[in-house]
Image 1 (cartoon, rainbow, N blue to C red):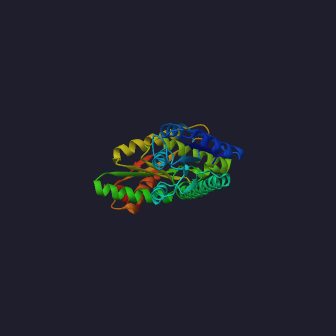
Image 2: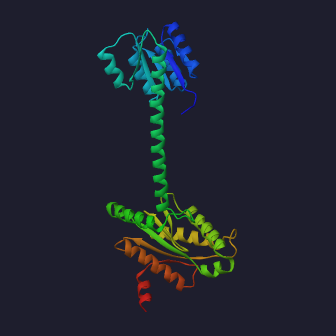
Length: 315
């Protein structure tokens, strides 16, 4: 909330406007005034005011109705009605549109200042409550982010990977869509990291994460599954297309130089739902089996799961 409280005085009586302006200016309030509802609405539309003080009887409109229109322009503005009479109708209408403050004619300095001060306090309380709620929401979103994002790479974490995959399998069932995932593991990462240290290893993981994220669509999910292992979910993507994407990533990493200290490669295992698996666990398991087959084939390779892989693992 601005430190300088701005007040718009709306009254067709120039003398009343000047009297109110003098009273408020002496106490440090910033004031402007309008002599008609049309001019007042224009000012509120073009400027920000904290409080409007409105004479209940204006030549071109009713003061209560004018405040209703002003609240539509600026819902946070506070209103004070100036009236020479009291009535049940005016009170009910004022409360309905958010005005609970009145000053009576003839104006008394103390009444004016007290009523304006009450309006300022009310607005400050509401502002403080909004700030508190905003901070609570921001804090909640922060912790939600921490719960789903890997702190090192900025990718989604393993927990979110499983949650997203569960939802996508249900969606694939509902709409008879295909769904492909692949598991990727950096080849011989320990041998790469040991000579240089963990900080260099972290830089490599971040760099490879960036390459993988840049190679997929916005609707795809790239996650750090654990250590030097990554996982990718490709909704509505066939096995053939998934193999193209996986190979593109594998080659990009193989050809990457800076900021890596040495050449790194990855092995990738690809599996599809429902073609290769009946549920989430089996899908992940078969992508892992294909990854293991890629390792056995000499690493730096992409392997699509097939039944012969299971036969090879049993030998």
